[in-house]
Image (cartoon, rainbow, N blue to C red; front, side, top):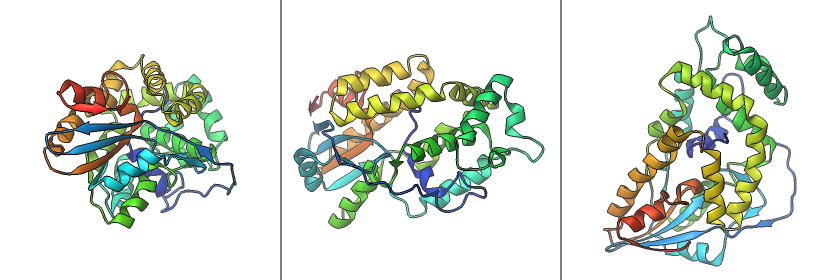
Length: 305
């Protein structure tokens, strides 16, 4: 199953968790000049009692050459009084995440990750880490969840996806130029808790499952990005639903429960006489249980797909 991780995964790109000792910066990929890719992502407009909210599906990491600025998106950005992300903008975000990784990401000294894996998963693990520009020994004392995320982060980098090109990072430049406030729908701790199952057995099972499905997962990234770039919300909803059909509980935790919580906060925001630009993961905005659909069920008028 392709990861539907929250925005905090993109932040992990910046802390160098893939290096021994968790250095402050992630490895820098070779600079490649690529032709621009013009995107036309979907945009919704929700009308509350007093306020207005533009809902924009974020991709937290993107290829550098993707240009997602359209006239309607730029107009919405220009009108916004407040910007809303999954996470607030925190100066100490990287330190916060580093501390979490250091305290919750390592095994006891007498345990080795590879020894915990089944023979089949061990073979898949060896294949995956052989592709990475880091020694296998760097994984020795990682907990399964951290090894899983580390492999994902390195795969993202190898495919020339960048956090700096992601929606939130690009929007931060717009926000700084306009000196506008940013608020978050969740806390960093809430998102980090989504990465680590309470049951260590489930944590290990998730990692082994992801190792076995690694190639299929990577093959799904392209179609999802294409659907987002074309503003094809039906296709995006279909691909997301198909990706998680075998994991209903995970979909509930990662997508549906969070959508319900966000809708309550968005409805409250719309009681204020302000215009909001809300950028959250694109998977949260599509389908019958997406944020726009839930707002419509609340009786709000929502323009868009």
